[in-house]
Length: 282
Image 1 (cartoon, rainbow, N blue to C red):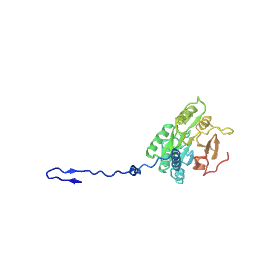
Image 2: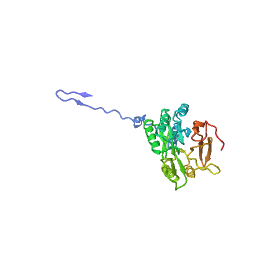
Image 3: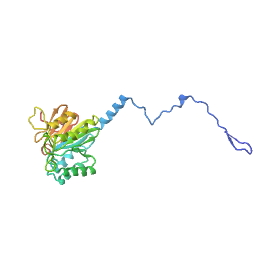
Image 4: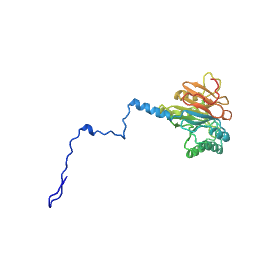
């Protein structure tokens, strides 16, 4: 209320409102919901992660530059965060930059998430690496995981090692005429995985693991890497055989028949079950 006196400045009288009980002054913070308990927070995070987690991979083995068949096959695969395409074995027809470029561009234009490792015939490695780099710049959903790793939706870790992996520690490392790596290099490339959190893992190899009781040749190094890091599922080429799934320790190893005869093979990442191709009994 303002009171005026003649010839004097206006004076302002402040009227103090009556005291309000403190309990009436509490205002809920609608912008910051109550923090859930630790157990509720973990459960909510797991539900959110599972909702967007990679669940199925469509595996292709030894595409060998068959762009026409690849284009047709990719058109039948749904493009969403719950699925991805993975390639193992020979990607190119002759190791040329042109063949790599044609295959990888076809994968990119399909708008799929794609992860791959090269086969032993995908030499020289400079063509493979350069074309992989170029296509990843243009198509960010594509990832080469040869000797490295990447994360798929839902923090599924994909790691791989292409080429031929030999158990002979004295074997020459070769990347010009053929991709061949001594076992110790594969172990070195996978070593950083031991420092990562325990995410669900999917491994890609172009060399089959050695398996006790099996007559086929395989790499003991690859078998030891699988037993050490215990990925849920491992994708490898079948080496001319039929598609089959078998257990190695706690991991499901899916051997995929050649693309020319089997096309894409759908695999459940969690269970290792082959869901779209005839499975040979193991």
